[in-house]
Image (cartoon, rainbow, N blue to C red):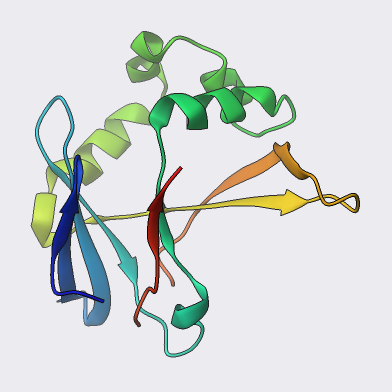
Length: 140
């Protein structure tokens, strides 16, 4: 992977050691300034993983279609209400530390049903700090 690159609102800053682990570091532009995120390198399987930059509007639309999701109560509300969620202050504190302690990227997955159709209602979000050379970066 290149030592650094940028795509509009996301900049790859390179491989860094964070908490004694090799991690791929990203800066993400937000309305409130940049936030720093990471994905940790693993000794195996990194060549089978990728980081995908998604359009937030499209992601939120899929998230809201998952009526059985554990965060549907938050997804179904207007983003202006999200700061009222009990976990928001904790997340805000985590992002506030900045580049010295970047927040783990979300581990997002979706699954193909037996007919070969990508099922957006099966989208799931998992907190993950685990995951060496991430081969792809794309935008969906």
